Image 1 (cartoon, rainbow, N blue to C red):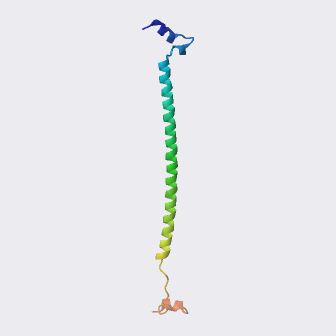
Image 2: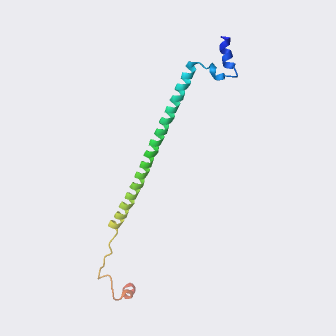
Length: 100
């Protein structure tokens, strides 16, 4: 190994001067790649968050529609009170209940 190269790396006054151009380009590409990956992950996270909100909103709307449909069903299937004059005496209710 060349001793001048070793001295450049161990020089306490200027330790950065020992880095060669190839190492600088590798560090630059790794930094740019990591920034791009980070931004891509962030964008995907935002898209998934928006999609999750849309799904939650659709679920809430579907629940409201189902509640409304159930209420309409209950109103439709509720038995209508019928009046039969032969079984109900409107003038003497006590007599009708207690008569033999």
